[in-house]
Length: 199
Image (cartoon, rainbow, N blue to C red; front, side, top):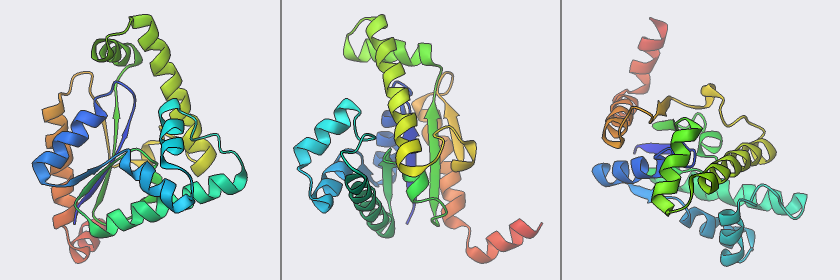
């Protein structure tokens, strides 16, 4: 019944890590399809909401009611996924919505901005300058998205069980670290947790 949330920065290798984890564990990987499910719940066209997501505009709701409906829809979908278990959720404020949820490991994947820009340039076949602008815009959007919709700081270490800097840690090493934490979290029963916390 394990649940992993991955908060990533553009070019940090967060999605490759999430995909590798899902494959190794036999878990469902949820990313953009969560947007489509939330769109249906909120009564918004899937294409429109997905386009807003691609352009980094989800933090700018048309109205307070639209923001509320979107937040509620995302939370409902995510809670249902968590109840089913065996899922890796990328983004969508999983670290906030599922905060305190049992058997959940919240991970933040980061790397220095220059390295992330180099990776983005290579992956997309664009200039380094364009990639640098993309990384800066993505960081700004993610920061504003979490602040506006969930009133949290995206880089608050208290939101995460594990923060991984992929400057010198490979995808393979990152998945091993996360799996080790997940194994401990899932295998430790509530009674054992109480004993450990009292020591």
